[in-house]
Image 1 (cartoon, rainbow, N blue to C red):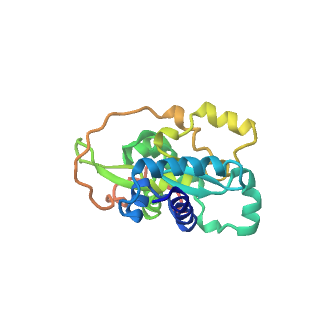
Image 2: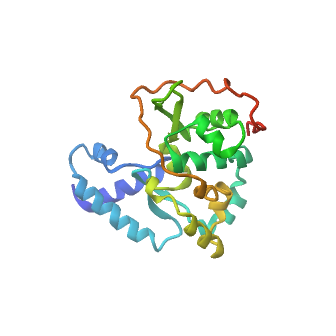
Image 3: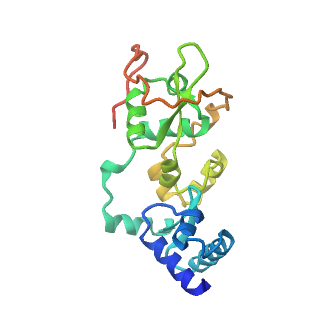
Length: 227
């Protein structure tokens, strides 16, 4: 297929897509008329073109998506009147931060770091599909382990978990005043990073439904509100 019409087709697909689109998915649309290399070349050209525009083409969650720019967040918020119910609470952001940096992690390990019962928050994050069950840890009681999802990457605009900012980068961005959205969505997200150490965990292949979250509250510490 000619590259010019292919480019226009891809741009239209990106425009109407409500989630990141992978090169493989676009290849299915062309049904073999274009290979991955040709599609990747068009994507790279589009990314360059959009650098000079008001919106941008970014790589998120192993795909591509047209997105607004952070510098216009305040204006977009005024226009859209963002639904406060869709925002994450401070407790949810704190919990999500720990899971993101320490995954896979059990609820007991999570609560040892936070110092409060986190059953309700974990349930909320599961319902929002921001975290998922990652099997059971090979220890007595076989507690469920949790990790982040692809939707987590989309929500925070990350290509992969390796793009998570370090604590130093987070502080630098705040000093530059370039954290309008990130502060909104991830208040204190990285302030807990120093508490978190990587831990090797063995994972069972099975992935059960939600853990018995309501059990073992045990009255340890105060309990978070659901959100």
